[in-house]
Image (cartoon, rainbow over all chains, first blue to last red; front, side, top):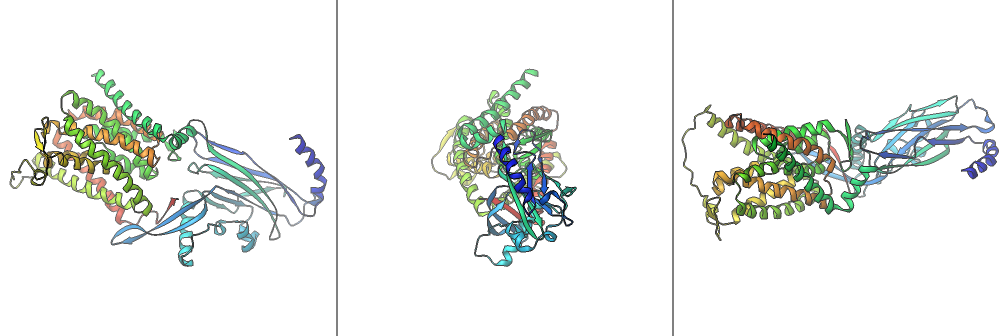
Length: 253
Length: 302
């Protein structure tokens, strides 16, 4: 820690003296623990923009922050009405759909940056790299992509907030990202982009670990690793509770 | 009060789940059915993933049937030999059902099959019960009383005959075994105990003595649902022990109150009420198949 501060002190004149603005980002928590009463969490992404020479330019830079969950391979199925009944009729595979994606920016992303750069940095829901499985017509692929985005937006797993970043005095920025309770566990990344003049001039990434802890972690691990013991425990619990109730009530009457 | 379910992976209102368990337990105590046909759809409707709902609801069936078995056992209302034969069939059925579940899950048609089976079974059983109850209540006159033969022709033609003294039967064990097999498969696929199918089948198809029908069907449901919980825990790993605990807490207490309530109500009125509930669930399921669903797209994890 002390060594880091030392190097930072050495580097500070270099950083400030550079011609490009520099980003000093941080996240409110590096680890989110899921416990018995977990009903979602709020992440605060904040930091400072250091302009060269410490002077504020007349045209200020913008900030976009992205929080991304671990990617998962998924199959999206589509229902059709066949003979009066709605059933799964078509499906499409996505090899790398993020389980959670939230973007917040100080202005709408399409005003900040051109489409190509947005696609490179995966800024915005329309620019996610979902790696669809091959062999499908582009038409069908677009339909399934739109379906997936719409579904997850309504579940609160995918969010876009074009006014979610506040920049105070042109220097300090902060953004709140809500994480709902049904997110999967894993390593999340929080990326901050400093965007100036249609280009990403600085970027920083922090990792956030979301994991079950305490009793919840113990139960989830037991179900996976010791499934036989876990199954026996569930059986004994149901038999025991049923018997206990029968016994308690037979004594009362 | 929110509680996080470690396997289902989301937060639920604990009070709501306990109350749900209590209400279903009340019904199961009153009518002598497991109540799985209500728990599973309601849990799915609440947002619990279907596999977790099916796997965790079976524990409640076990818990609710324990007290029933204890009561019938004291009265000598359990044919152990018949129960053993049916349990053997039921265990094979639950294993076959688990494999079928896996195949259907991979093909993406599991929800459709579950919906179809619910509509088919609940609709036909509920209809039969409603007709019976209306006739028994004297609201409608039965046109003519048919005399049914005690032994089903098809069952009687099966080879290999055993004597079941408590049931007063001399029939092939293959028939009750097949019945157990079907009930075991339903337990895994639908998260229901199958009591509402077993009881009429044992009376009308096998011709068992009425005295031992309920107790024997309950012990069969008890064994098969307990094993099914275990099979789910090992294969799909989707038994949520916290969810099961909450359901059981309300369920076992509700079952006791339900059993008490039965003695104060007219049995035919009770049957009428159960028939209406079953038909209501079947109708809701049928509409769910035909109406445009809320979600056209669904996500499955590989």
